[in-house]
Length: 264
Ligand code: GTP
Image (cartoon, rainbow, N blue to C red; front, side):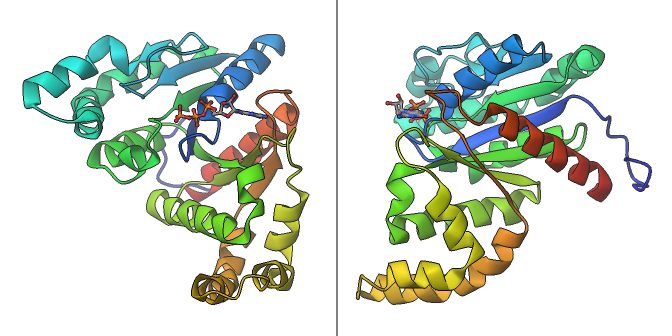
């Protein structure tokens, strides 16, 4: 309930779902699956694309950064490479983000969720001024949650798992928003191992100790630190390809949104 919070001009709906993850984790495919699920279940959703450089999207976006900023022209105009072009395009879009927020506010009564796809290079969103501005603009108006997409098969390697979790951890502390670890591609590898590692750091250390390298020692020490981080998270296993886990995902979003309303 929102009654506990004194501050709030924050409405209850829609809930903003920021979909972030490493390149190749399956964000775009997952977005498509989530959009299909909302259509199927009569969930009222809005879809936003924040990737200025994406060529084609498998879903129709209601709000698309590409309608406002032409990434190729930005590159030419400012003499930038691809990453600079994406970053500058997002900066330009961020300066107009109050307009985006008012579009959503006008429709708030008809919307349950806004699904937001972020640029393929994760740090362009998570470590840029515009990413922070956009996140803050959302979070000061609507309940906002982060869905951190993990490539589950690739994370079976303990060191990869650890670096992925550290990244998620940095996003949690940077945004201070509820974070849902969204283990994708469970059609290829079940995420049970990850749940076990998060539950029991000794199980993780055992897995990591098969590698005697320096990083492995560091990895083992870090697992102790991350223990506290895991306590603050929700995890779900999904497959963007098979469609498994959609109900669990939206349940986690609902719980996180409630948590958000209690906190802010
Ligand atoms: P960027 O385009 O770099 O942002 O990557 P992305 O994170 O949007 O990933 P994308 O959706 O392009 O998916 C990357 C690859 O993973 C593609 O080959 C997808 O087909 C595949 N993929 C995505 N989700 C799943 C899944 O649930 N299961 C399987 N088996 N493959 C998946």
